[in-house]
Structures are given as C-alpha cells and as structure tokens.
Length: 444
Image: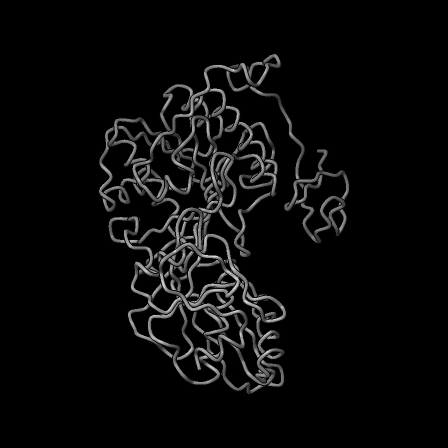
C-alpha cells in the first residue's frame, strides 16, 4: 500500500522519510501515514459548490452568539458560541475537559437547546455515573457512544442539535481509511469531515483533544489550523483552580482567560479572581505584588522569590509561570546597575496560584521580590509594583497603566510604584521611580 510521511508539527507531506522536515525544519517529526483510500459517501457530507459573491452584499449572516450559560466560558470564546464554529479544547489528562463539556451540555440543555454528546472513549454507563455526580439531568442531552466518524456525522444531520460535542477527536476514525484511530491521517480527515458538516449545517462542534508530554494537542499542527478556536486548560492537577485560555480564536480575542474552581459538583466560575493569586499573609520576605492585564481584566498577582547560596558550581535559575530568559535578563540588570553579586546564588521565581504570564509589567515586581530576598527584609506594606525594566535599568511605563492602578487601589494597596516617565490622569497617589536605583532606595 502506498504511504507518505507527514510532519506532526506543520502537516507537510512528502513521499520519503528524512530526519529533518523540509518545510519547518523540525527534527524527528516525519511520521509514516497511509494515504487516503476510498471515496466520500454521497450526500450532504460534501459541501455544494458556491459561486463567488461580493463580500459587502452577502446576506443572511447573523452576528448573534449562543450563550453557554457560564460567564467565564463566554468570555474566553469572545462573547459566546458562533454558528458553525469548530472548537478544539486540550489539556492534561484529568484536568477537567470532559467535565466541562458535560456541564456545557447541561447549561445549554436547561435553556431548552438540544445537545448531542458523542463519546469514543467511555461507555454510556460511565458517562451516566459522571452525570449523576455532576447533577446533570437535562432531558435535552442526547448521548452517542461510537468510534465511527461517519456515524457521528449522520447523527448530527439527523438530530440537528444546537451543539455537538466529540470526546475525543483522537478516539474516532473513518472506516474508509486504513489506519488506526489517532493516526495523522485519521485525525486530519475526521476533523475535515466534522468541519464540513458543522459549516454546512451551521452547528457548532466542540472537540476534546489529547495532549503530548510537551503540553500540545497530539497530532499534526494542521489540526489547530483547521479549527476556528483552540482552548487550553492550564493549572496544576492537584490545584483546585483551573485556567482556560484561548490560543486561537477567529471570532474573538485570544487575550482573555477564564478562571474555574474544581468542586465535587464540577467546574464553577470564580467570582473573586484576585483572591486566587494572592496569599492571606502580610508582607513576607521575597514576596511582591504586581498587576497584569489579560484581555479586558486586571489581575493582582503575587510574585515569590528565593535567592540563596548555591551548593553547586553552577547556580540554578528556576522559573514557574514566567519565561526563563526573562529572569536571566533581570538578574543581569541587577548586577550591572546595583552591583549585587548574584553569580553564586540560586534564584527561584514563582507566580502564585498557577497562573502564567508574559506581561512585561511584572519586571518591577520581580526585581523588588529578588531584592527583598537578597536583603532578607520584607517590602513595604500594601505595595504594588507596575513597570517594565529596560536593559539600562530604567523603569518604563506599560499599557493600560491607569486601569492597573485603579484595580490595585480598589483592593486597598496604598504604595503603588510606577514608572517616573508615565503620564497619568488618575487621582490615585503613586510613587514614581525612574530606574531601579530609585526603587532600591525606596524599598530598602
């Protein structure tokens, strides 16, 4: 049987194997895949050919979105579910993907909408047991346990639900393709069939996806290119708080995050997000407070630092929730501008609450936390540090600074440190520092 080799990163296909993908340059990503055998079934599975139209004269397009029944999920999706939308949701095993999908079916079912839940991994008895635990009792939820992609598409066409859920895309396959479920060809073709079905009928479809040990959705990268929205669950498995983040969204922003709390009744939205990322303790050594922006919301986060003497020849630089290179840059800035000797110290940085952020406004908070740990002295009470630090040690203003200051002031923080170059229109009293030397003098 003829075969081809497909890159699992970019989806490039070639007739011979090589160690390096000719298209994207990734190593050891070309995997053998059987070529597609057989023809499509006749019917509505194939989209009708349309004639080109002027985009300004296209009619029948509705901007209406379907609310999920959960404000956090609506926020991540960009305001709700769009007709014909294809969503891929991934995350570590056991983090709550199937739980959220079953709850989504319940939320929509209670509003009178029909939902088709298709499972290729669990039996009907298993899902029924989970539904009892989560108190899912809507009469509008239809359950289909099958591994056949064509069977799922036929059921979607027959039932015409308001929403279809496929759990998971790696567990279903097409009988016309001679390869096992989860293979590159099966993933690509099954997703393509579901995409055509959803777009043709205007039915949104959620697909649950497995992830690799690196944390990416298993299968070729083309899978994420095909769908409209890609959602990822983040957070520690043993942590009750979970973060849902959109990394791709054709119908909304990718900057929004949703915060959920895992309870015995499933995932519940968090009413007070700032309490998740802060400890209840007062000023501690090596701890500072920063403020990040995720989409339209501001979050107060706690930065924890530990700087201690190294027992090995090469000191450790460990970062949780931030970029590793960011810490290396900030340590170099500290050594250059404050003459602090850090080459013999292990430095550990952690963002409390399991959140991850690349917001440059955390630079000032990280430096403040490191200084506190090195000097073995807590920072001033009720302090927040907001600013980006340049390579010469200057503190630069960040975007939406007034919104960050307002959020900090509402939570009772009175010592707000910002860039001395910032032009503010707020009445809130702030401490302006032009460089980290001025910061060092203010907090020590």
